[in-house]
Length: 335
Image (tube, rainbow, N blue to C red; front, side, top):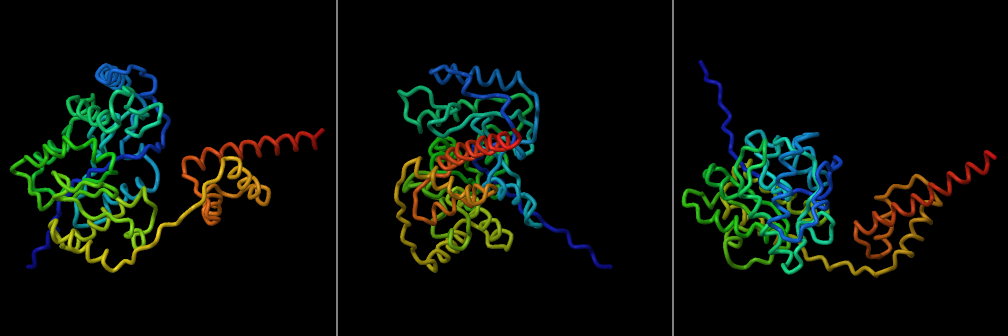
């Protein structure tokens, strides 16, 4: 009698920064707490989160955008990998993707009303790092898992761990990651850090930092904001194929990069909001149902520089104006 082969799962902890884009309206908003002192502000924030446990949804379903769509797809993508997704949330700290949380607005990004930075005597990196350290020492109601990446690593020392984040996130996680590297039971060969744009050349980050070069976009697709998660997807595919260990994975990525030619940066010209508005208006005059994505593609095809956030604002202003004009025209015809 043949024994049925039991599939052996490789355990993977995937730690990822969330996006500012949310799929649900915020019940809790950090912009409502105007204290400059970070400790006082955090205390009020924690009390608010614990007291307003309403409209609960799985953390996995709160965030949106290309980066997050890919992250969600990785959980069940590989039959021989058990991928457990963890989120470095500015509102809750380290949480599991299955944790039930109240929709919130809080961000580590600057120049947002809900940014954790309010004390302008501090640099952005110091303010963010202080906030993350405060989050680690708080256990929100309903959240029962580890409160830091270092704690997660000590609980699951043999698991493969992928830590994905922007350069800003790597700065704010610095103390947490330093603590991770002091855990003697941690298998560092199973640790992979992915952060495009990080310029760390020494310290704990450099030892396990994989190359996440913009040239990889030529084979992985996508934009800058989703490059890290696309590299993570490639690493998970390598692990699934049995190519395990940091040195092995790093070597494969560097070999891939050697085969990709350097692409000169696209030099785009700067224009005013009025010029972009006029360009969009002309496209809408030709087709009122033209999509936002198509408009942005056409603007960039003309060699015009326009950040996506700026474009969204102008596009909304123009389409609202066109809708008002169209409504007025219909009213005039009716009369």
